[in-house]
Length: 346
Image (cartoon, rainbow, N blue to C red; front, side):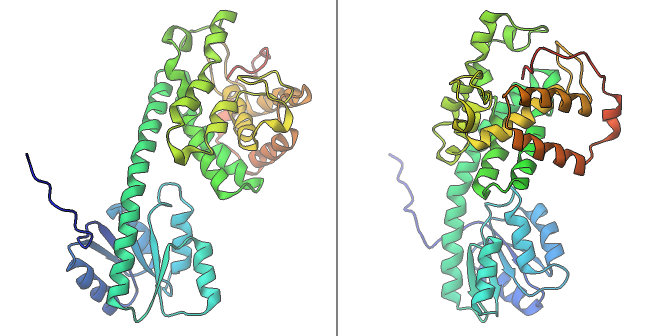
């Protein structure tokens, strides 16, 4: 039997980005942490930190607060506000000790603080703890990545839906921020935009890729995909807030949607957000059964559907204003004012 090497909690591995405009502090941290077997990269200011982050992809950032160009608070806020980088631990290293500075760091998303001059044992304890946390986080991210790949592979089967996941993720996050949703709901919508149709993996290609409208019998099968998607994602605890989005993004406020015929505010708010952007994207892209609508035509159809009691009127009004304030490309001018379809099949 092969013997296992005992786990040594004192042995560290990982990549650390040290950011400080003081050459002496950078060199000190580099030598200290490098001596522990860690990979170290450095940056002299906030702007270079953001550049180096993308190149080095660190497991932990030790970030000085008082720097030229871009402050440590601002760098922390940017990294924590980006879904691609928000899970990387950041420790703010500062000579500031006032309570308001600590509060500002917490608001920026910092995972810890070290006060200059720092204690070596305290530094190593912080680093060891946060590298362990990042290891567990990476395991969760790998599971999430598998779901994302599966969702995109389903989308990739159909040339008519290329880019649909990314557009929904972008639209829904922007709309969620506009209406003041909490950060965890915004993250759920980012994920939900990608995986909302993952349940279509169980739909036969003959139905999923049919170049015409579905028969009533085929619709019965198609309408199973939200519940299937929920079951696929349910084991991942970090997707707790994503599950209602997946299951309920095809409900309608009047109760005529699926799979549960929910009405009004019984439909989760995050699902109502995704509904709006999902319908809009379906209308403004070409599908086998219709040509693409212009923005104006799509919004007109959606306004009529709001009048029927299908979509959230308040969210739709905010979405229209968001589009008006963030003009899209001129490609919309070439979209065809097609004849109205019978509802929006998404």
